Structure formats: C-alpha cells, structure tokens
Image 1 (cartoon, each protein chain N blue to C red):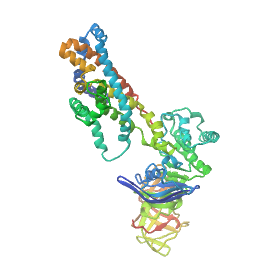
Image 2 (image 1 turned 135 degrees about the horizontal axis):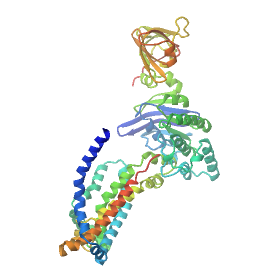
Image 3 (image 1 turned 60 degrees about the vertical axis):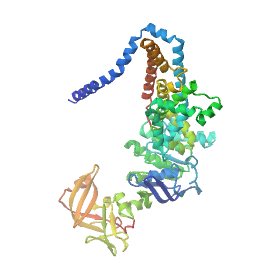
Image 4 (image 1 turned 90 degrees about the vertical axis):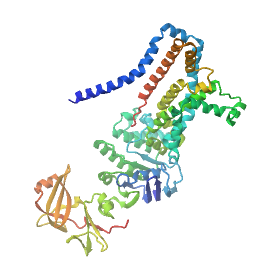
Amino acid sequence: MLEIENITINLPGFSVQNISLNVGPEDFFALLGPTGSGKSVLLEGITGLIPLSSGRVKIAGKDISGLAPESRKIGLVYQDHALFPHMNVRENILYGVRYHRIPAETCKSRYDMLLQRLKLGDILHRNPTTLSGGEKQRTALARSLMLEPLALLLDEPLSALDQVFRDDIRQLLKRLHTELSIPFVLVSHSFSEVQFLANKGAVIDKGRLRQSGTIENLFQRPNSTFVASFVGMKNIFPCRVSGDNAWVEGIPIQAGNPSPADTHLALRPEDIDVAANNQSVYENNLQGIITELDCQGFCFRVGIQVQNTFFQAFWTRQKVAEHELRPGKEIRIGFSAQAVHTFSEPEV
Amino acid sequence: MLSASKGRFTVFLVCFSIPFLLLITMPLGQMLTSSGPQALMRTILDPQVLMALARSLGAALCAALICLIFGTPLAYLLARQRFPGRRVLEGLVDLPIMIPHPVIGIAILSLVGHNHPLGRILSDLGIQLMGTYSGIIVVFTFVGLPFYVNAVKSGFESIPIRLENASRSLGAGITSTFVRITLPLAWRSMVLGMIMCTARAISEFGAIVIVAYHPMTAPVLIYERFTSFGLDYSQPVAVWLILISFCLFILMRFFARSNEVVYA
C-alpha cells in the first residue's frame, strides 16, 4: 500500500498542497489534471527527488518521507524513458542491481523473466538511441522492475509512443500490474488510456486535489464543474432540483440520484442518443434542432438546441448518416436518468 | 525560386565574412610565409626556444589539470544547484576574461608579496611565485579557469536532469550518479574545457611579464627577441607558437563536434 498523507511541496512560484491518496497493491491509480497542475511534481515528491515541505509518504506501512530517493524502492518510469545513452540495453536493465544486494541467482532468474516477458532478448547489445519508442519503453520498464520496486510510478509512459507501440505497451502495463500486485501510479492526459488501465484516480488542478475515487466516479459523477469539464462532460448546466427532476432553464430532466442541495447537472456527450419518436427506451426525451455538426475524425460532435439550452452529443458517422442529420433538422434526443449526474459546486 | 533566394543569401553571408577572415589570415599568413624553412628549423633547434615552448605548454597543461580538479565541482555546482548569489558567482568566474591582464599580474603580485600575510605564509613554506615556474602555473590557471568552467558547465547543463533522477530512483546515491552517469556524459566537454584553458594559457603575456618574466614562456621570449633583436629574430618563434595554438584549436573543434550526445 502506498499512502500519501497530506503532502505539501513548495517550489519557487508553484506549490502542491495538502494532497492525500491511498493506492493499494491492487490499484492502478491515475493522476489526471491539466498541464502544469503538479502531477509530475507529486510523483517526484513521492520518490524523494523533490523534498516535501510537509506530509508523509508511507509504503507497506513504513514511513519513507525521510529517506533519500535511492533508499525508497519506488520505481519511476519517465515519458522520455530516460535511458542512459552511454550504456546498452543490458547495462541499462542491470544498472541498479549493485545497489540492492540482490542474490546472483535471484538476479539471473528475474533478468531472464523480464527479458522473456518484455521481449528484450534480441536487443540487449543495442544502444538506446537505435531503439524504437516501444523498445525504449520496455527497456525502461525492465530497468525499474529488475529491482522489484514496492510501487511503480509512470509519468506519461505512453504519450511519446506511436499508436502501434502504445497499444502494445498499454496491454503490457495492464498484464504487469496484475502479475506483480504492487501499486501503479500513472500520470496521463489520455482518457482512453486511463479508462483502460486504471481502476482509481484523482484530478489535480493548480497543485490541489479536486477529486479522487474510482475511475467510474471521476468520469460519471464529478464533484465540481471543473472536474466535470476536465473529464470531458460537455453538458454542464446550472439547475434546480425538485423531486426526481433537475430543472434546467425550464426543462425538466430526470436524474439518477439528485439531492435538493444540488446546483449543477452534468451529462456526458457519449450518453446522449437519437431517440425513436414512439418507443424511446430513455427516461429523458427532448425535442430539439441540430445547430452544429462537426466532424472529429471517427465521430461527429453534434450541437442540439433544446429551447434555450445547448446540448452536445458525440455520434458515430454511421448514426449521422442513418438519421440523415444536418444543421437545422429537428431531432428527438434521449438519455437515461442514470447518465444524468447532479452535484453542488464546492466552495474553493 | 527558393534555391535562387538561398543562393543570394549565401553570397551575402560570404561577402560579409571575407573581410573578417582576411583580418585574421593576412597578418598571420604573412608571418608564416616570411620565415623560411631553414629559419624555422634553426629556431626550433635553439634550446632557448625549445625550453620556452615546452615551458609554455607544460605550465598550460598543469593549469588545465588544476582546472579539471577544482573547476569541475564548481562547474557542476553552477550547472545544477540553485542558490542565492549564483549569478554573482558566475560573474566572478568570468571576471578574469574581462579585466586587463597586467591587472591580474599586479593583483597576484600584491597577494603573494611579503606585504601580504598569504605571501609571508607561502614564503615560510618555501613556495615562491615571483619569477618561478609555479608563478607561471598560477597565472595560467587564473586566466584559463573561466574558459574551463564555462565549457564544463555547458556540458553538465546539456545532460537531462531526468537521467540523474532515474539513476537515483534505481538506487544510486548522488556520488554514484555523478560518477556513473554525469561524468561519462560530460567527459567530452571536460576535454574541450581543458583544451580551451590550455590554448588561452599559452597565449598569456600581460600577467606573465609582471609575475614571472623569467623563466621565459614563449610569448615573453618573442617579446624579448623583438625588443632586443628585431622582427626577423622574433618571427620564427611566433610562427611555432601559432602552429601549436592552431593545432590545439583544430583539436578543440574536433571534440566540440563529437560532443553531441544523442539522448534516448
């Protein structure tokens, strides 16, 4: 278990303040937040590369806040791999062995296991500069895992990779986490990556923790307009809750579990569907006019005006073609009550 | 169209570069060609010239070694640590480049003379800097230090700090990281710094004539021969000094080009 208790890190012109997180061995934990929000600083604080101003870091119940980075046994894999350019792949993988008093037999069996699992056998004598992105990242992972760390921190490990290598490494990370049963902490900007890999996560902004919990909660039940907006909820409206309905500018919307104190409503664009005229399966069915149809590659962002409220939906090319959607066309949209999340905006 | 425009720009660059290059090559070329092979051979076989050249080169190499030992930690400190007064310290390191060199000589002289406690301590220890080989090394170190420190500092700065962080996270302490990661990646800049320091030291004259006119270094010998015997007698020594300096700078450029480490 990796426990982060009330960490504060003060740097010139920036600070990370009062962050507490618990990451169990079964957890693949995602740190989310805009660029410059303090995610990487937090990782370097956990590893001891940046000193903590206050707070504690515990691993397996032991307080390691006072230990130097080299004594913490926390693996760190960087986005740019940080492979040592004057050493070949083999030397990179074995770099830390001499500092950890690993018995020769254990070292050999672990080394062989990693070469096999990470498919590094053929590139051992190559210089890192000649490797592909995927090979570099596999080498960086092997280098960290060679030392059997108590936790593994991954600072945007996939963002510098091509799509082909990214899928490969993503699968590998998931498999490694299952096999190793140690806390993995991932910094990422990719929602699909986070959805695929992580089971828990936290959103950080300007060095402060905005929300933490399961990935499903973060993406479906944000606790503020900032988090809702950050996790891609395009439909965020002020609302007034009355009974099961949240009222948005005179439109009654049935919500999953509304509370009378809730002040805002959020709905993911992926959760809005084209509703059939007669037999809609959804609790919420609204008549509107398409105002925007914006191709975004594999899907369309569709803007729909319902009375005075503007909804956004993500629909596939197939759906757009099937319903012959175009700006100005009248349409009936539908979404379930469970997809509608209401919350009260916290005071900052 | 694009290549024509590029061609015109290249012509413009070359036209403006030529006068500058002539300023360097004409006087030096004149000097190199005015001394015949016989005069050059006679000069290099002259024990006084050989000794002066060897003294210049030897003392310059000693100064470069001193810079390697004491300048490397200072360069690392300036490259990696953030502390109050860092800019002032950087300015202090650059000071020997800016101040007139006779002033350096006078400053060293006033520090190691009998009127200063340090001079008396050195004298009691039997260390004499005035008019000695040690004095030449001290002056050479003084004038060469900024060149060494700045070259090595740039070398350290070019190493991504993430490599050192990765090393620390893998269990290596600060010293191990410095020895196994930083130094192997910075050695070319250290060699480059030593060559720059040596080259600068060999050409030193202003401070040397004040601290150690004797034993004579090559520039002092050239000056001595020029004032005593005229141009013909001093020119061949100057040619040899130019050739040695030229070789050093060719070496420096070679290292500078191969200094580019590609980071994975």
